[in-house]
Amino acid sequence: MSQLSAKQKKYLADLSLLFVAFAWGGGFVAVKDALNSLTPMYLMAFRFTLASIVVYVSLHQWIGKITVKEFKNSSVVGTILFMAFAAQTVGLQYTTASKQGFLTATYVIMVPFLYWVLYQKRPPIKVFAGSFLTLVGIGFIGLDSTLSLNKGDWLTLLCALFFAMHILSIEFYTKTIHVFKVAFVQISVAAVWFIVAALILEPMPGALSSRAWIAIVYMAVVSTFGCFTVQTVAQKHTTSSHASIIMSLESVFAAVLGVWLLQEKMTIAMLFGCGLIFIAILMVEVNLKKSVPEPEALGLESD
Image (tube, rainbow, N blue to C red; front, top):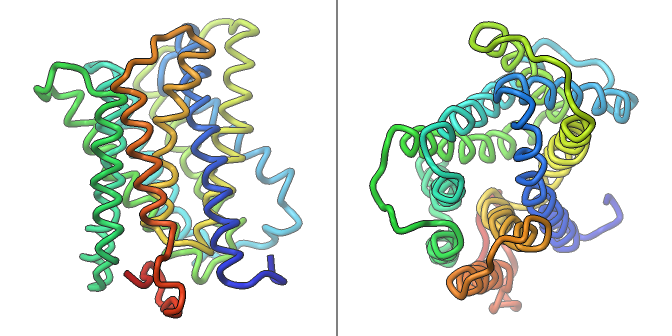
């Protein structure tokens, strides 16, 4: 990507994040299959352990030697990632999948506010507008008629906060650490945390079916190795606000793939929600003031 202009890198990064959203949307089908054979923490332990092996085998020549400081800083990213998935997995036991899909996606609107708090720099107004419109769209896709919040819902909101923190932590640490090192360490640290949690909290799993192994391999290779590596690289060339909105297309792809692969019903409300999210992305991505140069400050651009 070194031969590309800054704007070309940004658009390529955003396109890469579109792949992440699609792969994560497909991950819902894989998780549904795997949870029939595995408890949640062991599922995540298998997923992240296999993914960390794939990352190192594929990228070891670029990962190279990792210093103590690089390991400590990248471990922060991995620990946040573990907490996000742990809160999401436990929360799913007490709430519905559709409601959790909506509540998890509230990280879209949390990211610009957290950025503002951490950096004391207000993102453009269109980012806030796009985040809010995305949130409304996700609501049409996944929110059911029950609007009350139980403990599973509160855990899911905590999960959303951790995902927002994860996006911002990647943006921060990849300024000084090679992106492949961050990708490898974060996935490996999350794997260790999930192994410890599984051994403490859940019984040892029995024999796994071939369908379960296919689902685990998909989640490890595509949803974890592929997606988190691409996300880590892409966020070096785009902003956290852009990343959160584009990756929220996960809910759109999940809805579409659910109709295609699981014969779920596509409602008018879901179609309307998908349309709102696409409008939000266009709102953020299209720069109507092309004559005004984009500021170099990370996370900010012309309104």
